Length: 153
Image (cartoon, helix red, strand yellow):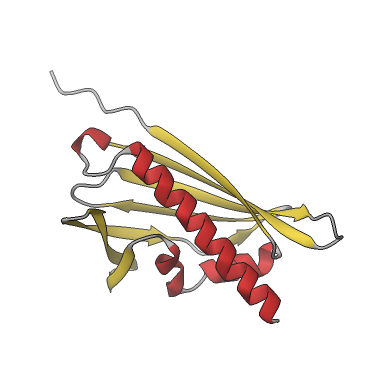
């Protein structure tokens, strides 16, 4: 009898960003978006997918094939989807939503919500807690980049 598929693990993290969603989404449209993920380095591009490597543990590198779609505008937000897979990593699909969020001073900010659906943690060198920490780091890096860009304009 075949093994039952492992259940998916959902990770959800959010971040307020002091920049508008449009300029924040523009950061995700280019190849530098991969560098916002903590510890990830771009290695190559193959057939429309980016090959990256990351330190899963202090002494262990892991490579992944990443497919990222450009942000799409909806009536109330920007949505981008991406997924990755690779040996020693949980197969993951993700959705990042950048919604409009008014600030107290009348400016427009962004509410960023990142949802990751992952499977096969038991065969991975990465834990669900490590993935959540990396996801939080990604949103912090995105916020920092968007806010620097917003204040420079």
